[in-house]
Structure formats: C-alpha cells, structure tokens
Length: 213
Length: 260
Image (cartoon, rainbow over all chains, first blue to last red):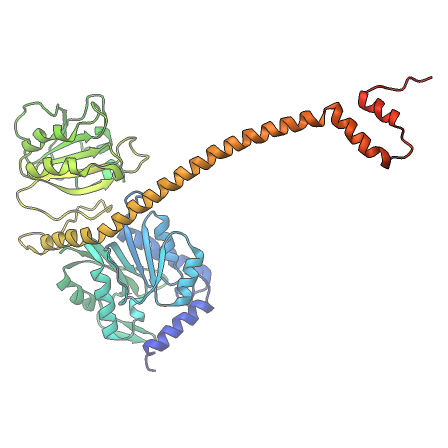
C-alpha cells in the first residue's frame, strides 16, 4: 500500500474533519467519542506536566497549537489562561474552531508554512507530525516549529517512542526519537525526554525539548 | 503564581534571608522558607557590610512609601550584593504599570541581572503584583523561562550562543514590538475617545430624561384640568346624542344629580 500524496492527505483530513465528531475527527478513529474524550484528557494532563501548571491572565504564556484540528487542545489551553494560536491546514477544521470560539485565534496554515513575528513560550503539536508523510516536509515542519520557540521555551511534539522509522497504513510515517534529537540538537534544543501516553496500549507519547541557545 | 512558586530552587544554597521590607510589611511567611534558613530583618540603609553568596534579600518596591521602597533607595542595597547573592524584589505596581526605567539604571550600575520576572496571582498577596529575581553577577546569564517556576535556565556556560540568542531576540522583538506598541497607543486613544462620547451621551440622556419627566408632569396637569375635560366633552357631545350637555357639565364639575 502506497502513502497518500500531500494533496490526497489534505483532502482526507478535510473530509475527516467534516465527517467525524468533535473528538474522533482529530483523535483515534478506532475509539468512540467517550473513549476519545478520555484519550484527550489523558494527553491534556501530560501536556499540563510539560507546559507547566501556571497561567497568568496579565502576562500569559504564548502557545502555538500546530495542527489544532477542531481545536480541543487549543481551547483547553486557553481556558488555563494561556494565549493560544491554533493553526491547521484543513479549512473545515479551522471553520469549526472559529465557530466554537473559546479564546484562541485560528489560522489556516501548514506546520511548515506558519509565519509569525512573535516567538512562543510553548509550541505543541499533538499527533500531527507522523501524519506528515513526506520526509522533506516533515523536516521543514519540525524546523519551522522549532524556530518559533523563544529562548527557554519548550517544543512539545508527539510521535512513537521506539527507535527507527516505520510506515503504518497509507497515512502514518513514524519517526524514531533519534530523528527528532538529531534535527533539533544543532538548534540548541535540550531533550527533556519522551513521555508515553499510556492509554489503551498507545505507542505514542510526547517528546519535549527546551531551547537553551 | 504564588510567591513561594516563583523559583522551585529559590533556596538552593541560601543560608540566610535578609528582609528589608518596611517593619509593618509581613511577607516572609509567603516564602515558605526551609527550617535551616536563617531569617532576619534589616533596613535598606543600614551599614551592614557585604551581602555574600548564600544570602537572599527580600525587598518591596512600589508607588506607596513608606510601605514601598523607592527604586532609587535600593541602589545602596544593590551595591552591597556580592557575586552570587540574590534579591527577591517584589513590585507593588501592576505589571502593566511597572516603571522599568526606574529599575534598569540601579540594577546595571550594581552589576545585577534580573534572571526571572514573574507575575503573581492576584488572590495571593494583595498589592504585590510581580517578583523580580535579581542576582549579582560577574557574567551575564540567560534568563529563566516565563511562568514555569523551573530553575532550568540555559547552558550559558562559556558559549556565547545563548547570549547572542538573547541579544538577537531582544533586538528583533523590539523591532516587531514597535508597530504593536503604536497600534496599542492608537487603540488606547480610540477607547478614550469612545469613553468621552459615551460620557457625553450619558450626560445628554440624563438631561433628556429630566426634560421628559417635566413634559410628562405638564401633560398630566393639562389632562386633569377642567378646561381640557370640558373641551373633550364638547367635542364628544355631537357624537353622543341623547346625553345632554347638562349631564356632561355635571360630570366635569363633579356634581351629582340630587335624587328626588
């Protein structure tokens, strides 16, 4: 089975966001909505550990949720008092996000294409990068997200924790932790480790990196 | 963030806290000091010699003397800090009103660096809005991340890269902040103009409501006047054949027909 082309993947995700419910559209389609609710909450709790437990409405954290889908994580982070920008390439997802409101500002953009004059305290991308199928685009996406992190800020991206690259089906390309570290170390990111989701046998977890230079 | 959360390693290597806040200001309990850390109070101007590494000074600056120490009055205290000594400077100004220009000169002149600037929860301590964790340094260090409470700074070490990054972030952020600052000023002016228009409208509304009340009062007086009632009756008369003008007059004048 071959991988989807970039155009096919774009169509797939836009159709999925139109078709599926609030959580399944960006979550795990093998789970029903209630299970996806648990899955989302588990990942949010892990994010809370990595982003930190402090918020401030006067001087908030600036957070980028890259590949925000229908915005569940963006809205949750905004409820914590953070100032959130959500980006997604799917027009349907972004339209849903804007209709839902809840604080974040949403933009239609790919991960590699987002440009900002401002740096972020936290850049996060939840279960998105292993859906970037083309290696060059994956590198470009990760580099762009990393470039948006300010000194002392944190990059939090999810992928499988096992070493080596693998292909799952026609729309997942898993990259091992070594690929992330190798790409980010020259940009002076300190690897804080990989935190597994530990949810129903999921092999996925968060890589956390802190910019130290 | 609460005061004891501003740096998770605030007391690492600290053996003494010197509290130079006003005697009636009691903030030390919010620090949750470890038992082995000695605590004493002192005045900012007391000639007590150097404050060495391992000393953490607690001070409160702000707009309301004598509870708040004026930034200029902190200068002698800053000069007494030896390399490695730290100052936890609490700010009585709201973050948006922090007079940064009053702090930069005394800090720089005393080789002191702000290594963390943290807003405080409004519910935690009334009137204290932020903390600046200041350290007397020999070489510039990279600052702490915002709002994390984490002591992980960066691997400044001997490498110039983090410091270059810091300088470059400052210069470029300064550049892109300028249009935002200009826009903020425009929006503030616009809000002030809208507030003025709103106040004018409110004033006009109050005057109009007074005029309306006066008109209603005059209308009520006119409607209850015998002349108006008579006029209405006369106009209605032709339409009410069978009702004599006399009966109408009696109604107007409030007289009742005397039963025979």
